[in-house]
Image (cartoon, rainbow, N blue to C red; front, side, top):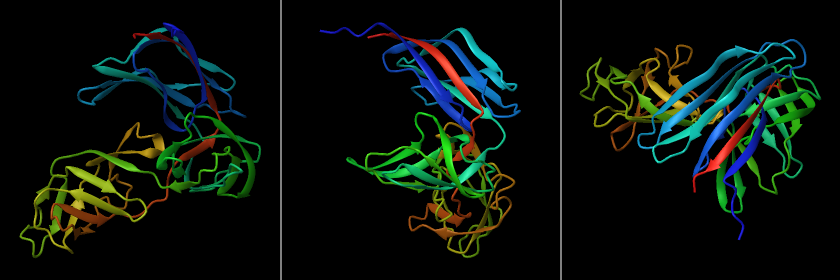
Length: 328
């Protein structure tokens, strides 16, 4: 009978994609030592990208997290490298906590993806960007946070692509806002692009204000708190659960700026984003209600979006060495 090794060395080598990416999570029954980590600037030309490297510790009882930054917004000069860790950082997964390691890169040339037409079995994907991308054939790129639905042997599943992170080479440039690249085949499974999925986290108290409550009994200036919200990017509908109320169809409200907090699949739900921002159409706007039959949910239309991922030229690569110690 084979005995599993108590200690195991692993190597992680991935490109740095735009946004925040999870580098490592301690496996169950293991404690780990992060021995070495480095980021290199591999860009073609003169660029000065920056990187933030941090450990996120999550409480298993509450779900609360705390980020401990090892390096913040460190600049990497052309043809140079930055050593992030050269020693030991202890990482744990216990009944109380889970440790994960994240990398956040900032660079030029980042563009928002608005569609990915994936062809199976060739593996060729035609990617559409929100603005002119400025890329060239044979250029290396990284992508992140692309949300697909796919039909597999066990039914319909959802996947955020790519996982694990990797780089790709552009095959052709059909237009200034599209490019084609070989992402590899998927064993006959059809993949359908979806706009980014938003997950509600929390809301500020009394963030919904009635502007016109005619026929509802709620006067102008009445306020409600939101205990749950759901956004449909394809229809633009925002559902706000505010508890018992008598608002009716056609009443109007305003949502306080930065009062709703969501995570988004564009960065694998790793960071939080407030809404509405001052640049969003809903900021300061009077929104007309459609009221759910249960009379605890109200619905407003805040506009659609087809954004669902990010793409950028390959500018940084990450490498790390980790020692895992089995506790079982």
